[in-house]
Image (tube, rainbow, N blue to C red; front, top):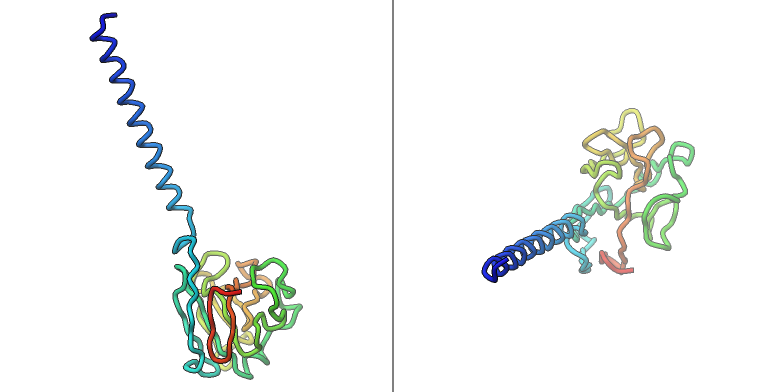
Length: 183
């Protein structure tokens, strides 16, 4: 092989290796972006003033790329909480939640429910059904895709498409202020 042919061969091999390295880096970055947490890995706290949420009403906020539902439960909603025999996981053993929550209410205070506003099977939006508007059940939350039902504590009823209770984000309560993203 002549020196010119050898140099051309080395140049072709070097260029092909550089192209392969560039494609590998591109695929790695693409896959890392697809499988990373929504909003990145930085968890920024978000403060919400609770004085504007009337009893029986809810508010939805965006936090870290996810929808969060804040429900101010009134006496009817608390009385309509499902019995343990109606629920798939009444002890909340299989769901994600911060430590220290009441198992009965799944909140730090009985009148406040804070959950991700997504069904646990398909991630669909949730609609609030008050006890007065519910016909064949006590009311709670219903997902828009398949009609999966959750009680006013975010616990899934038996026989629903979802098999887990609604996820509760880490939050703290300080008087009339709720802070998402603190433990």
